[in-house]
Image 1 (cartoon, rainbow, N blue to C red):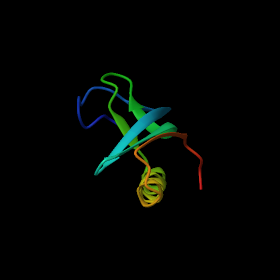
Image 2: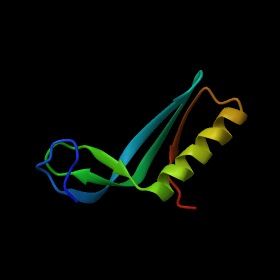
Image 3: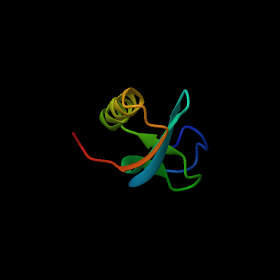
Image 4: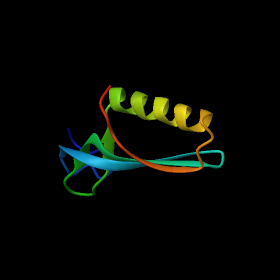
Length: 75
């Protein structure tokens, strides 16, 4: 797909690091599958992966986590 940000690059499959902040919690998740623009580097996380990230953030916030780094694990 053509990048909607730069309008010049093509997105390619890749892996990215996503940082989520909620209140006082920071959750970093590495190796998240995404499409990455080969021109500007814009990252597009697929809907299924995004849903898993939000579930992980809910879980971490509920457990009282302040800062945590995790590896992405497909559901």
